[in-house]
Length: 417
Image (cartoon, rainbow, N blue to C red; front, side):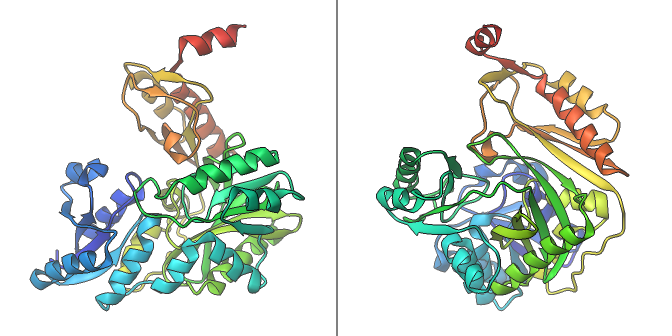
């Protein structure tokens, strides 16, 4: 190992955050997690990941911490796997003269209102939308286009995204969003809300690296009015012309936003024969999608992102032709996890084709319906040579995991009436 450092500015609490650190070690550099609260990251202690506490919301303090570390050991790169800290990581990389995306482009991209305006001006298809700052303005914007999606102008993981069926609901949800001065990480958020057209076409994501579409992913979304992602299949089984349309639109969006360095996760919906961009995220996908890509296609997007941060050639290439699916465990009612989860996990892992089955919660823990990604209770990943086989295995295995949830007494009584 070279001793050079890869600085990780905060992280995902699960999934790719841990993988970033592991790939750094494999590539011969020392990962260092810069964070405000190490307790958010149990994997750091489990993996022996070096952690330095600093104020990651303050650019000057973050830079001072990085410069102090660099005085002792050369810093080779800066990255983050967290949506909320991509601008901070990009700005820090630029300050240290290291590779990274344009900090200004990333900052603008993270503001969904600014992103929408930029894409619309470039002729990239987006839903019709309005940016509002009061409940009354939201009501007015929605008056002639119900139902509508109301969402915060900054956010991740479907947090605060809701399909509103009537004007009173639009006004009430807007009021709730505007009342939140900070997000779940404690980072200040602007007092703006998007009111946008609800597209009913199938939803996909395109994983872009640089300006190349790597793979198209079919999304599964849970019950409305929330938009919780409950599964992904890749590569998506699509006619060639539809896949080209999705890929072409995703790359046009990335280019219009001034991105094109490293990974971007572009979410789209079909609107007739056209693809419209729901949002562009200037980072790797969440939801374990990079792991699905690695298992199905052989392209390691996490490794490629680390290589890019280190200034090394990074070209994720397909080396396989498999299919992979993930299904997340959610519940539609209040309940509690069984005191012993080993049986449910064993049954899920025994399903042919299942490569991984994980529960995120502890035995005996109360659970309830998911309003966003935080309500997901676990996942299974299945791999096969056919799309249908991978999806079927994942569905069967997640049903086995669901056996670990016992409804509360009230819910059992309602189910019997």
